Length: 271
Image 1 (cartoon, rainbow, N blue to C red):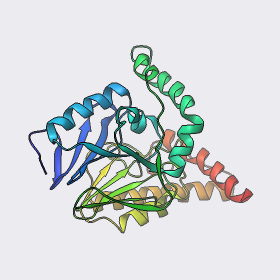
Image 2 (cartoon, rainbow, N blue to C red):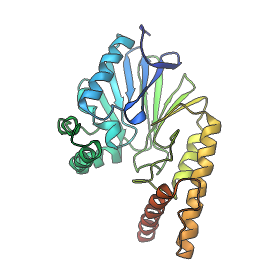
Image 3 (tube, rainbow, N blue to C red):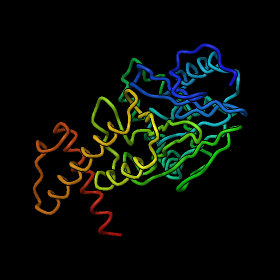
Image 4 (cartoon, helix red, strand yellow):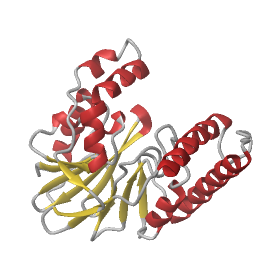
C-alpha cells in the first residue's frame, strides 16, 4: 500500500483513522491501488492542510476521493483543500451546503469565537460534486468502498462508509462515543431505526464521528439509548407533556431531542 510512518491508527490493512484533539474529530483513510479515499475533511482550510501534510507521511498515493459523512461544518469546511479529489456526499449534503453554507459559516464563526474567527472566514464553501441517493460503490483500486444512506438520524444526509475487504465502518455522527449524540439537526423518532440498519452491517470496528472507536456492543447500547429517547418523545407527543429529566441523556440533550421530535411529527403530519 506504499505506507511509511504516520500518526494514524491502522484498523485494518490500508484502513486508518486519525483522531484529532480539535473537536475530538475522527478522520478516516482508505488506501487503495489507485489512490486514497478520505472520510471527512475537518473544520477549516488550515486543519485540512494539516491533514494533507500527515497524509503525505502516511502514503505516497494521491488523494482521489473525499467523502463527507454529512453537512455539518466540522466535517466539511476543509473540502476546498482537496481540489484534485472527487468529492462525494449524500444528495442533501450537497443541497444544504449550496443553500445554507454561508449561514453555517456565520454559525461556526460564533462557535469558535473571535480568536479563531479568521480560520472560518477563509473557508470557501465547497459542496460535494458527486452525490449519493441511497448507496454507491467506489473502486479505489483493488478494493471497494460503499457509501450508504441508511435513513434519517443525526441529519438528513448521513452516509455510512464501509470497506468491502476490511471489518471497518466509518459511521459519521450517527453514533458518538464519549458524549450524547447531537440532536440539534436530528430526527430522534427515525434515528433508532437508522442505527438498527447500521448494526446489520457491522463486521468489526465502528469509527464514530467523534470519540474513540466502538464495537457492536457499544453501538447496541447507543441504539437502546436512542430508542429510549424516541419513546420518551413519543410519550410526550401523545400526552402533551414531556419531562427532560426522564431519559438516558442529560436534560439539555433531551430538550433538544424533544424540540426536534415535534418538528419531525409536524412534517410527517403535513406529508
